Length: 151
Image (cartoon, rainbow, N blue to C red; front, top):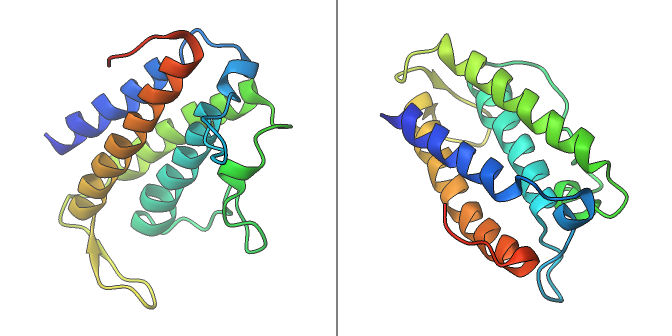
């Protein structure tokens, strides 16, 4: 059930970005916000990698767009980004996240310094919440671009 809800939210974000040009994906909300659909795609790439691959599965991977000097690189560095490459990277991260989680039970726990013990079940719930919040943003951004709303 958790996997199904998460997948529905993943597909919702993809639908919000469907049939848009790279320039449209880079269209910001209203000032002073720099929020864009491409920024959301990049952010969710980071989040998928972080929670499923790095934290849950223990894979040693770098962040994709963010670093210690720019913790918001996923949202901030969109203007010069290659939208098609970033979109393809998101699809890859989704596949890799699914594969990482597929080999683990929901009761799988992991601990990191400075954080309480966390389970894969918690990660699924958190990711559903994360997508739900950002899909609301995506709906507003898409409406601003071409008037389309809904899931």
